[in-house]
Length: 260
Image 1 (spheres, rainbow, N blue to C red):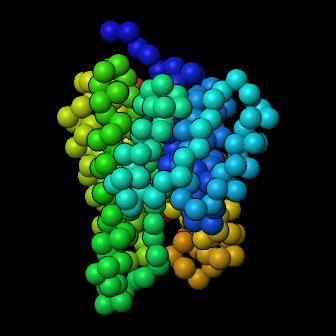
Image 2 (image 1 turned 180 degrees about the vertical axis):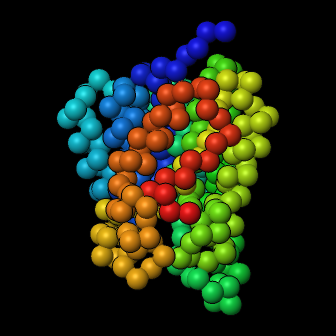
Image 3 (image 1 turned 90 degrees about the horizontal axis):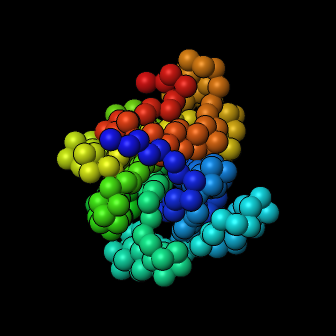
């Protein structure tokens, strides 16, 4: 069997890449930068922050004008938007993505179950879990056809129950991890790998600007074995690694500096 782990020239779809105030947006921008550095073409989505994504694209094009980058407005909570996204990607690039980084997410910090409205539960599950299912279902046919694909989900340490957020957020991320492991078991022989990266205490984002914001919480750096918070670029490094190896699948990588 020929081993093909080359991602140069491949097309990567990164959702939530605008680099806005939410943790995942900054992580999405970092993933876009790292994949671009390895020679991938990019299809990047934003929900409302178009200016921020345009700035990212301008930055990347200064580094290489030879790699095509397309941008797409998409509310991942809406199935019609996700279908339109794939239609637009096919129109722009002549194909569907070889790599899917399902990064766009939502997490309003409500800790007590008694304070979590049913509407909040439904919306969180919709954005974090249902959209990941729809994106995967749209991405898989092209990957099956060419017998090559990489799907990476951005989850959270919260999937294991450890979270300053509530059970709705933990449940949504745990659902993504379960889906990823199930699909890896069923489809990896078809040349498609499924993995997730579960970050924790990532600073340099709108949600956690600096380590000062972690003081007095379970994520205080004094509780993190490596003695510091994580960086969005470190999330991107792991995502790219997962894209560059076909021998790792069905794994959930906890990126937390040793925090459990």
